[in-house]
Length: 282
Image 1 (cartoon, one colour):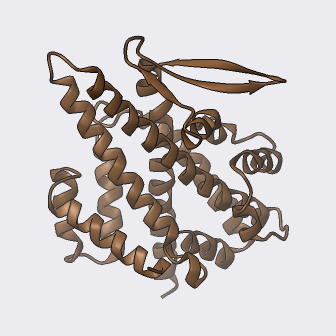
Image 2 (cartoon, rainbow, N blue to C red):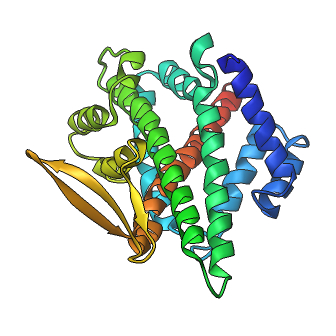
């Protein structure tokens, strides 16, 4: 199966999940309106619904807005220097540049949405039980670490486009494929250097150690102690790092959600601005 086929399959699977009500009734109602609206109206509806939601209904809305403002600054500064290249970079992020990566980021995003919702559903189900077995605790912990790793990988892709946008605003040449091939660590260093530390909140949304530990099967959950634990190299030694389950659930995992949501919503805002500019020209 090539990338285009994977992309089309991911879109189909996401539509099926939506129509099955997997992502909630609000999303299902919104999707049903999609065929009745043009793109600008549909995106406006998405943004309006988000803005109308209270802070109580959207956990971390204030943080989402902080991340979103940073992405909008990146778009604006690049757009002022080179409007067309900025639009192309953002569009290519979702659509892909070549046959071998067409829609790759879109597919990764839809997969993140799916497993993130599965984790939330499992967590909600567990919260309603009077007694949770050790195996059930390990199941939800496994879902949490999996979705966290996928989220960090997607944010690494966001680093790629953010670095490209800063290069555009600085009128510097860049190779987006070379940037994308960098490790998350090297991307974060480059992003910090180019932005002069102005947007460190984006970098701090992820914990690379947790992601790396999960990728190398080094991250474990101990139900009896309610902690996640992994080994980390420090100098010539390896030390044990423990993370309370409560901290992972309430503080660490939400940050990747906020960052990704902010990236998506800021993209909606930028697209609507482009639509408005195009209509004004006409």
